[in-house]
Image (cartoon, rainbow, N blue to C red; front, side, top):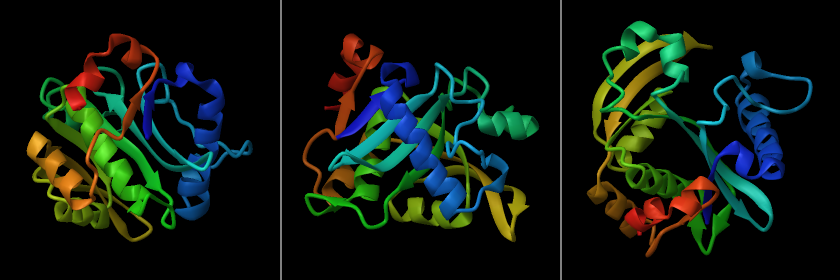
Length: 208
């Protein structure tokens, strides 16, 4: 199951998340700008409003992603305020960031990346989002197009080590979620709601 939580819901789990992010983004992808001596990858946007999605298997984190409400400071707006000003918060309530999964991991014959991507989509829809904004690479956008995403906007904003970085905005729908479930043989919710999400109850019902 993909756990959906805030940082304060499980500090011990989040310490493992910071280490997993460091392994993925610093050691594997070479993001030197976020390298730290403590072996954690964590930034100024990992505050109380950030929504974390964590996929574990055999007591190991095999997938992770983060959602940042656009009603508070978020990554794309911090870096490119003139561009994100044209993406209204009410239409794009979340930024999708820090998405990674173990290439070799699978659960019941389904790749961890497919479970994670389906879980993030299910979570966004349950939280009321029908559109999403994010910064990423062209290869990721190509992958998302293959998964059925339709983009409202794709704009190259910078270049890093010869690779373009793009600001993208995409639509979400129940039909897209059903496509994911059918394609990856997922017959029910993959989410485990924790903390305030579990107490409210409404979000998990919306996603069922």
